[in-house]
Image 1: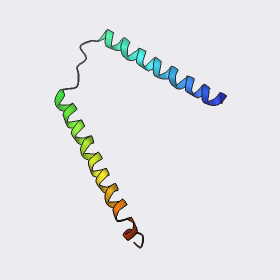
Image 2 (image 1 turned 90 degrees about the vertical axis):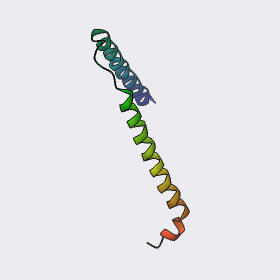
Image 3 (image 1 turned 120 degrees about the horizontal axis):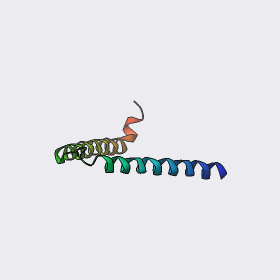
Image 4 (image 1 turned 45 degrees about the vertical axis):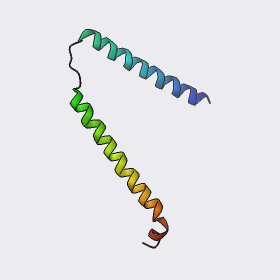
Amino acid sequence: MKHLAARTYVAVRSLTERLEQGLAELQRRPDRGDISITTVIIWVAAVTGALLIAGTIAIVIAKYNTNLNGI
């Protein structure tokens, strides 16, 4: 349990430091540019499409799993 606690502490500390660095950078350069709404829409559509395709493949494999055993 000691090792798990130590690894968890290191991970949390590292994430905290990264967040603090990001906030400091944001305060130093507030005009660094943001992601456009179009980019966000494209990424959401791409991820949704990928999940739908993966889900469809999983459903087909689950449905025909007994028929595919001999292949």
